[in-house]
Figure 1 (spheres, one colour):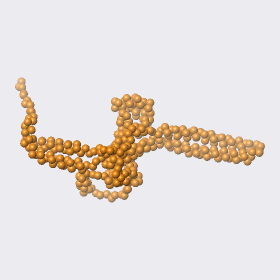
Figure 2: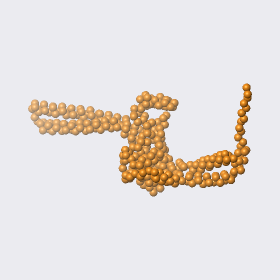
Figure 3: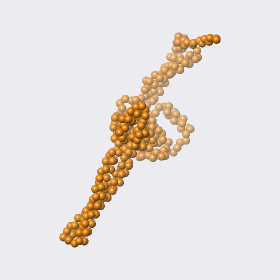
Length: 347
């Protein structure tokens, strides 16, 4: 059998270094140019800040919390399978709620103010008129506008609640921009809700983070207490009517007794007994509805969820980005690599 001997190709780093050294003038020209371009790009990207809010929602049942916690550590969520979570909107769906158009458009009328106090307006106008963008964004938008048909704009100042059913092009872009600025995530193991808001102004960033947190809690509270609030309102109306009827029956009985206190006729006694029985019936109904009203109030309080704020919104001090030094370094490394490959292939 013939032995086939394969030659191993060894990379000659010495030769590569000699080639690179011979073309060092190319590096001295390319790298400074790349550095200047990288600095221009890095300085063109506006600074931004981030604010983090963490919430811990109350679970609807704690009887299986230990088992659920143990199962979640293995990546298994048994809360819905065993009926622990009775709500249609579980914490895992909170990010989808925040990403919905209805929730985003509800943020339009929020009053905001920049840290330097130069801008005081609503969130919609702030995003529409007061956002810094890169210079190449103007170029790309100008090119895109050439090939797109301009639509008539419907006046909207952002002060009133907007119906998300029929959005204009500008409003749709603002909704998309909010989606890029507001992110929500839920830890599957602990159900801790993390809301991260990004903005070019630190005070606006903290204001929106706090508003999103409050609105999310209000929505979940309204959802979970909707049935209990309807029952409470219905029981309250019945209680008010029963109290009104009882007071009326008591006043009639009292007036009749006072005006006929000296009469001993059987007809008087029978009518007085009838009025007293009617008053007693009204009182029994009033007492029963009073107990139901207290029960409905207790049920509403029981259904009201409690959110524990693990980390509240605060105005960030330092910007979160862009990482300009890192960006310039990456561009220089890529330029060096591409230049080296080009030189070696050419040689």
